[in-house]
Amino acid sequence: MKAESCKRPGLHEHLLTIAQKLPTDFEPYGRRKRHSSDCSCGCKHLLPLAGQLGLDWGVCANAKSPRCGLLTFEHQGCPEFESSERHVRRHAGS
Image 1 (tube, one colour):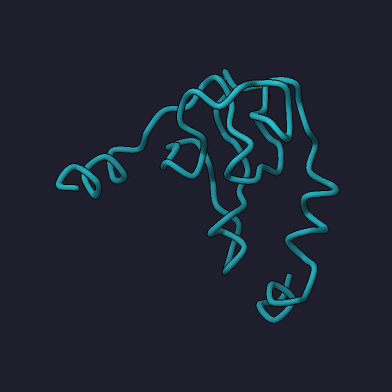
Image 2: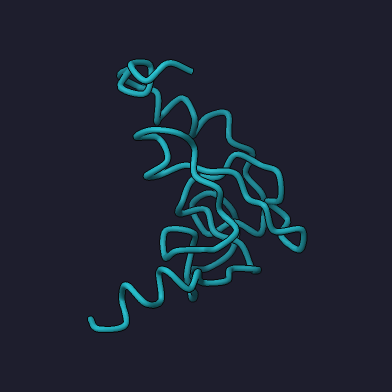
């Protein structure tokens, strides 16, 4: 995908329509109530997409996760979240 296509209007919404939604995702994407961290909190298994899309989108690489191998919006979450060391250190002083 070319960098300029990441700025295409409606691309984020399009990805939301094609990303697989699972019952284990947080509401409103799945059935789980939000009571723990989601991928936006620095999951070490979320491999970000290139460019600006990587700020919100990635692919899960956690073999224990039901989202493994799937295009994932950062707020979908899963029950196998693990914080990255880099994220923990960055927010430790907050």
